[in-house]
Length: 447
Image (tube, rainbow, N blue to C red; front, side, top):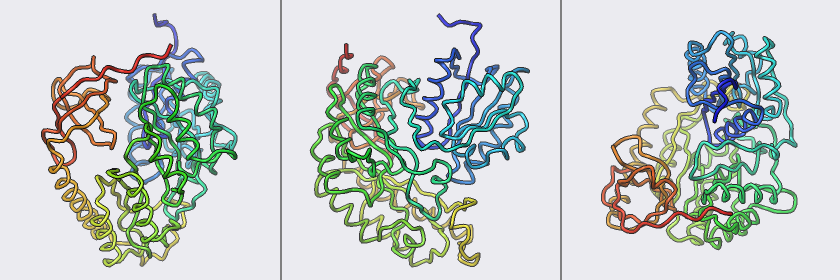
């Protein structure tokens, strides 16, 4: 029974899966300190907004949301801003949003209960100090998802892409000890989950000084009860032969790789400081496909990067056609204060209307090819994991294949966490509908 007198906390999360994981850590820490998590901000004693700084639009959205959340506060409620935007702006946030009392960067969550208690007594605080030893090993996350678990294995980034703010907001790369990741994986199985997603800014560069990412894949994939292993986001430069071999040889590792390309032009990649060429990326794709036949590839692509010419954009389109991505997360370049890209010559910046047109052309190119491939899959059968109830449609479930296809099937909440065999019966071009052919019982709870 919940103690009605206990203080409540509401956390709202923006950005990447690493932020979702950090929110789970924050909720776990505050729960251990006596706070009760709630699903709505209305009247919560503590409101925390965990933020992203990767694009300006994300920051503007959060600033607007901070204003909206103010009306949900009680007289004695406190509000905090955490995450990458908090790290980047620091004290500026207290000026931009006077009702905010706490600003905490990604390495400051250990002090969260003390800072919240101080804020409830009227004291404002900022903690944006980097701690290159912090992995929150003694935290017990309060997970949002009951079907799969996000497990951070690496924090920070040592790449210095000219457009990216992440090294500024999350610091230098450091990896958890393999044994600690395996211990957490055993805990995930004990909670009844059989899928894990390993998280890192460039996750396949993982190294704890003794073990590399290949070792990590084999160790996590070998934990009894783990049926699916995914990871995000890798860097093309860090797919060693050892890593690719582990991907191919460990049965639990799923046949899907999210492989950020960013551009199909070597000249643009050089200005981005991505440290690979178009040819190098293509070689990486070929090595992965040769080792894992049928693997699905998705990607990230930026258009309108300073200096991008029509010819360079056409090189991106041709790469997309040649590789045949199942999907792509596409963005217009967003200048971030403090990154080298903002110091490029003003005349090199691509006009907004040109960038918007390129984005739409890219999206159309990806979708057209994806739709054609998906139509060819109708009638095939796949194993899916039931992840959640669908947002649209009554009595429908959202499920995922091993190679990351989304399939909607009929069913109810009692089927969450089950593995099913489905036949693909229809497609919108990006998602599928399916009919259950044979149900599989969920894995037993570890005892």
